[in-house]
Image 1 (tube, protein in one colour):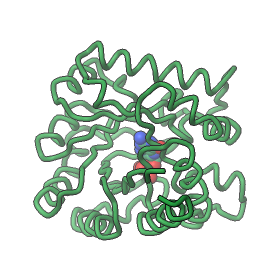
Image 2 (cartoon, helix red, strand yellow):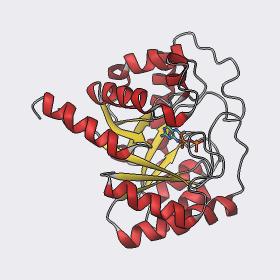
Image 3 (cartoon, helix red, strand yellow):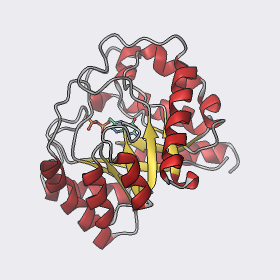
Image 4 (cartoon, rainbow, N blue to C red):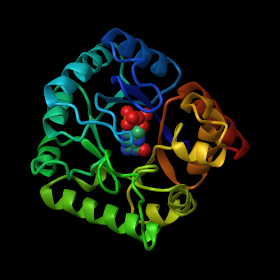
Length: 267
Ligand code: HH2
């Protein structure tokens, strides 16, 4: 069993759901990036706009002012892979010029008419994520006939659209978007059926860390920082069922859990 890569989250935002405001200042975000690299992150996912339910959009200039100093500092100091978590092609373009090599887009390159073209021109890797609706409204009574089939078909269609626009197929990873327009039952169905998503033939990225589903299972975990146990359980489940990349807030604990799981499996 090969161990998934660990993508550490750096939210340079005042309002992210689990750590909003903690790393809003550039220096604090850079210090957090250094800490996550030291803890074993293979990739840093740097974002300047929250996608939590109800989040308000951020103008591109503001988003760039948040993320570029952090990307530049990480690029100067380390070889860690840098991912830019943005829906905006102009932010992705500037981030890639400054050293990011992955564009993580929760809209799967649908937010702007320029997104697909920008991804093809940049030649970077892309993470295409499933989201129902948009962050402001996505948790308003989401419904699916068959969530696994609908998410799988959506991701297949977005991968085809990216390839048709000129993105290399080897550059594409897919993410079912746990918590993005989904109830606990939807999230569990997707997590139980990761092999059906892996069958599409692209690496799977999973972001389960500190998500609200953990509170739905354990109501005592109202505060996202109280969801470490659930986050690790989900991370190990994803690792055992085909995830290639895990997007997490708690890098040290996740890396340790994955090492123990790999040792048990004899890897
Ligand atoms: N989840 C969040 C943000 N970006 N990207 C991918 N590919 N997959 C995810 O599951 C995912 C993501 C939400 O987490 P966080 O960044 O901590 O919060 P916020 O969006 O409020 O900044």
